Image 1: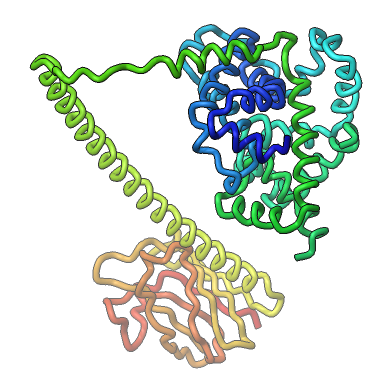
Image 2 (image 1 turned 180 degrees about the vertical axis):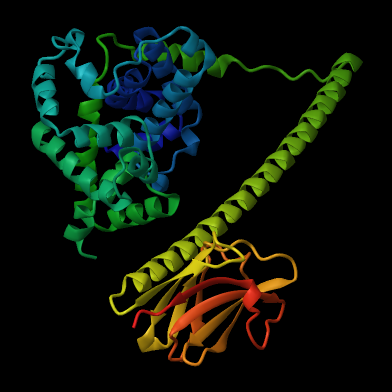
Length: 176
Length: 263
């Protein structure tokens, strides 16, 4: 089924369509959330909340405002960031030393999960540090162009072009 | 539209990231509707990021059934409205309203205090900017003087302290080409109330003083260097203390410094 129709049905509260969307996007959102909270149980909890929220607020999505992927990504990032900033989360002293998604790919526990994980880890390791930072901030953390430019101390126009090159590299590595 | 340029600008990558403004989002959406090539590009970007994010996920998985239960539960949870509201709940409403009102009032006060703080900081900023401007002007003036004093065509004449004030000294830098002197009076004491220093150009045989004027803003001038016009064929320079407004001829008892021009 075309993505567009799928989303339309989802907005009409068709739970079969929602399940398909869930299967398409839940793993990536799980990754985004885990990257922010770095705790397995909490990440699972947030992931459930995110999709429940998406279901409840399905009518607020509009293709004119952006991609469905971007919409769900936004909900996931915000939920994870809210959790990471909450008092009880800070008190539980989560280990947030690891800064980037790359660190997760590098950690041993993930190596044998999927057949292509090692391959991707190797590829992503090859990305320039600036690329890792750009992707981390723009996609995993939801920074705006301006915030990214200020954090990395590069001109705002450079954020756009450099990010394009980084994503191109990533696409080459993943052959998409 | 040049599709190649549009794609290469990197706007589509930011579109997928959700890093564009609402207006830009709308523009990209319109462009995608028009050109399927752009949609292909967006899909590829999306897929790459989706794959990358999937790799950051831990080993555990959340099954759809757990979501299904939750949204199922949620739909069932319909709380009937109770039409018989007791006086107790009505009172509670009033209490809530009062607390809310107090909260709003407190917020307003906070906001006003912050605005006041902001104004103070803005004023301080403005003041500091003015200070910087002044410092720049001072620095430029000092640099200008230094350039003048270092010029090889400038004649330097030291004026030594005289009987009335042996500790005093001054320097004249004479720019003959431009008919002006720069008088450095750092070594003179501050003139007493009602008195001013008067500068004289002298020719020696016979002794003829010509007034070059009085130094009226001695106290205010920070670097104590004064530029004075002098078209005379001076053979010596002297500085006397005179009543405010200056004198016709120098009061020799009040001659503070004197120096002759080397022949």
